[in-house]
Length: 176
Length: 308
Image (cartoon, rainbow over all chains, first blue to last red; front, side, top):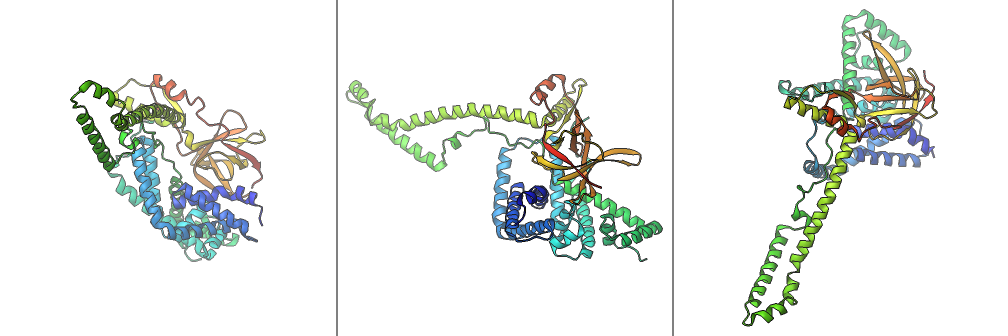
């Protein structure tokens, strides 16, 4: 049994951020984080807390994604329809940021699963040993994995951006 | 030493190599122009990837679900009518009307009409009454809708005043209005005031731990340092993550900080969150009055921690 309060205080925020970035859905991320902490409570002992939590969360995402992929697709469609009905016209500033977020999401989705997870974990501050532990990699290969992930992410983003912004007609808001 | 592979370069830049190996790499990079170029490339990729990942956290501004206004309300939907139900209802009404007409074609008109007013005809007319009541309810809903819409607008003004101002500015620009005063606005959704829990001053080079965070976006790492760095002669305030063992880690891409009134607090903002908008003077009061405090207070409470 662990000091649950401490574990939660220390890791909930980065774990939810990691999962939100991974899933693109804050509510889903919160659910997975909650399940992860529940499992941590039941665990007798955890050697590397952060690595363990990120590994369990990652596995839960994989399992759930496999199980619920069709249901979630359906919900996505419904949600998009509801948004289309309910959203007011976005302001220019919102459009730009939303476009950036959408491009980033597409670029991230273009990565292999392991590359994506390693990169997001690193961005959350996990060191190479923790990433290796969470993803069942050798520590030596983490650098290569991250190098590949970063290169592919940037290349995918740039190519999406090039295809998305013809004739430099982006960003017309009136900030002085 | 052999030329460096990309994985080793990234591991070195991430501070993941053992001390001896890191020194070897550093020495080699100094001597090898090719590898130095690869290192520069890798630095760009690390920064670029961090920026892209942080873009995933962006909450689109202005995409605020609108409460349906009266104009947008469908009576059909309010009455829960489908086309089939509508046809059935119309049929019932038609039959009822036929009955009325048949009964109102009297041989002795006046007494029959009086009797009919309290007869099944009146009962059959109830769907119409019900519909009228429902319409009255719709009117009530409309009034409520307006209240909700007003409060939604107010909330929008409070939470995205800067965005609204940007729109106003764009309109002013299109209409060729006279030059307008510039007003600086902080986009509330993406900035946060960090306040010291013990009242001690928050300062540059200090390390802190978040002990209370009421924001939705959780932009700031659990443990962070407020640092000041100089690059190419330009000084900037950056937020750096701090590892659980108290070591200063990477700079959090896109975050910056600045002191605000009161030594025990700083404003931490992401990207160009502080923006200036040219907006009509007359609009200032309307747009900003509800948000008399553009920066939300005490969103983030922090305590000082030791770090190196």
